[in-house]
Image 1 (cartoon, rainbow, N blue to C red):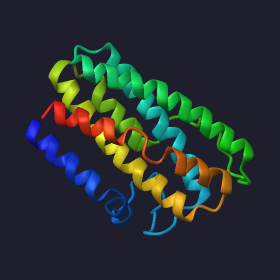
Image 2: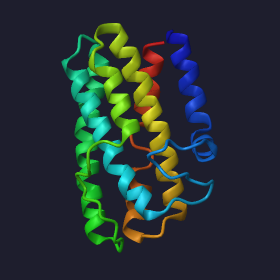
Image 3: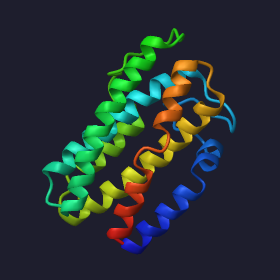
Length: 180
């Protein structure tokens, strides 16, 4: 199982932007082509993805898991709370007319489904699933932010995407390596 996590992480990070851009998007998110994502999609997706990171990490803090994974969860809560504040500031400066607030609506179905997978797990099962889902969430965020940073329409949101793009990638690699 741990070897699979390492292989999955390597595969995910190696082709994240291209792989997600070419994949079929879940029904709750419009399809993102290889070079463009619209502002409304970006503005709807960011708050849900950010909230998933926070909520799943709050669960991790309550579980019987390794100390470094709990430390990672605390980092996620702190940094994604800050990212939410930064997103709110970017929205206030943006030119978008998207009807999205920084706190966002309830989780998008894909993010809620990932969170639901964690709720009844504990110990090693929780830890393995948490690391796997954090890896997947970061792969998706990398593709979303990378695409919008390159082709976004709104200057304030585009700058937010550029600043936030690589958040936690190295720490997540270290965590996967430590538990494989």
